[in-house]
Length: 276
Image (tube, rainbow, N blue to C red; front, side, top):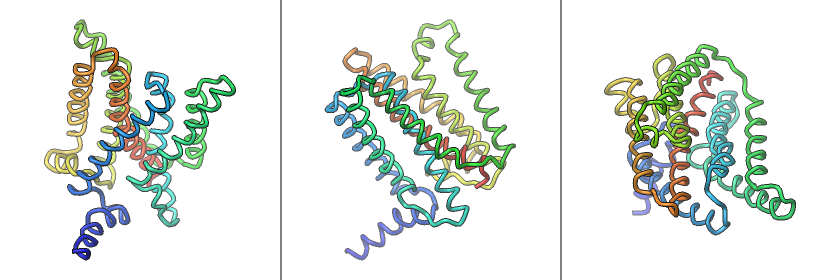
């Protein structure tokens, strides 16, 4: 029994991380469950720390969300340069690394607010931005076509989404709030990086469901899939959590959705422009 369990863990969890072969149905389900449990625990922790989950919190946490994609791309860059893999920078462990770092900096930022009067979110945002900038300064752009293609397509789609708020319909205007537009834009950016990477370069989709759909239809399906699924999720959040006391919970859930798009999208983007 112990042998079989060890073989199971090796096949479905350890080898995919070690060799970068992508996700499978087993680890996808397990990681999804872990994400849900982690989200609940983090939400309770933030409430206990008396952190208000509002637009300022959203702004201040974005650098740390971006850090996930940046560190994964940096690991890819180091590996391509012949440097041994760092397991702490490989998905999903990279998110544990980022969580511990972000939490430590949040505690420090709250202490600065208490003793120096500087709002915690300003210090936290600045610290995260500095870390992002420092790591990004190590990167070099070698794939100009990929850069132009991704920026051009993503910019066009983002303009369309932003313009949708101008449609003369109260339901549409109410849906396209600033945070909903941000989340949709991020996932369209993620879809763009996947589309360009698979259409013009030798990459493959690591996730199970998107991989199945892409193989059946083509990389373009990511735009439809992302827009449809994310729009429905955001609509349900707004519909079911429409009371004032639900505002922080709703914002937190939208941040979770944002994480699922920004991290992978930024990793794809940085990998492609570096040619790794």
